[in-house]
Image (cartoon, rainbow, N blue to C red; front, side, top):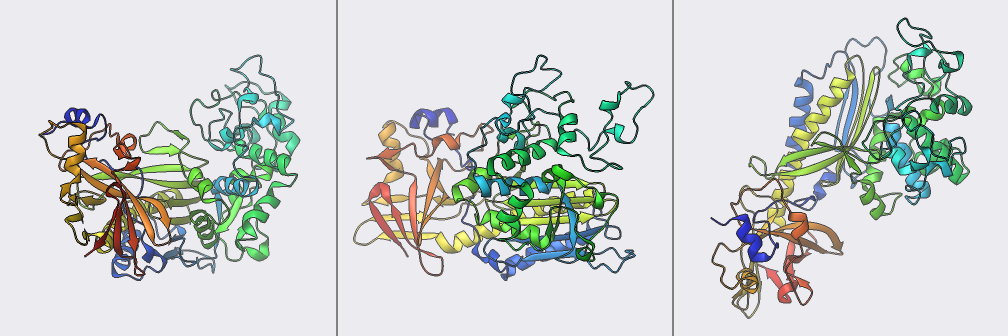
Length: 555
């Protein structure tokens, strides 16, 4: 049996001896998600809907909810489900335009609007450059006061600022100015804004209280969830642009996307007849802290917003790709943090039913207040997303359940359907007329990605040749290649890059695939590259193999 050490010696570190998936899609995205009319997708939708109706975590008798699953390739969601509790005392019937309070999804909206307005060039700038109320000099006591000069705009939205989570919203002194057993507060320390029963804090009041709390930690040390940071983001962007932040959100997102059921403050009564209203949270005025948790939206508007992110409607595609990446980790192996994404790292069976998994990152933003819970979730690997809005006494459990079912049903099933389409569109024998040149593309049972077991050029076994070039005396199993799409598409041409390894070798925890791609080259041409040429029906007709300088035809 070949050992990892032997293979490393063979390739001088060029192969990890296994098909350890790269952090990227295993197959091209499903084009049929734009209609979801295929029998396969209809079966997944039926399975998911049945799960929604049967899951004990979703209390259908007390929970209002709306959920949609969508693709950027269509303006219509390909799965929708709306629930109105039968004991509901109003005439409300939850549908695509029903308003919910989305709370912390507002953070994602705020970051999106910021990127759409000023791009990402300010993330590394200190916030003291844009907010004059913040001290620019280091504090005398770093345990007692934050070092504001070290905090950047990026740190605010990464949850890496280290500042206190809140300054008013959850402060008990708003309702209980003095409590036996706790320190006595002087009048200036009692919070009288930003939480029920007080009005929203003015800018002056916000800084009065915001500068008092102890920091949680130093900037960039560990993520800590933060609301106040997004109020500061709003102030900074206002300083940079000279525009009120609500006007920026309206100009960049609400108006161009025609988000007619999106409100940045409490909707007027005329717009609230089709709304799930749970007081006192519905009427809580966040004031300047609205970019953290103050917005209201329908599920269709949330879907439209998510679709525009996947489509790079307002951002350069490179900016979108950068935005949909982690910035830091949490103490969980399965959760990372972005701007301001909560990234759910999901091991997905690939293919379905195998013991091989690959990591799929789902970029989510949860929102929650007493009675309302919401989620936007995007899977860049599969190019689709989910919107969830819930309200009721157990809305949090319902949202978590729907998200969990999405991860357990839609993600692996779409992965499997993508595999089947890859079989139809790419698998086969590719030949070059007039000589003994051939390549096989297949799917290996229990393994993700397209598998190339043989590559012969004019009678020469190229994979064996690659071994001999590195180590002429090697006598073990010859590594093969698994090809993954790169996302690079030009017209009807699509490139794939390979992971090299030996079939049947177990994946190791310290998989180094990301460091091994593009290792073997000849004349500055990689061994692990193929470029498919597709016909009008999306099926491969040719395959260019640059290492041999030939384009093979699919039989």
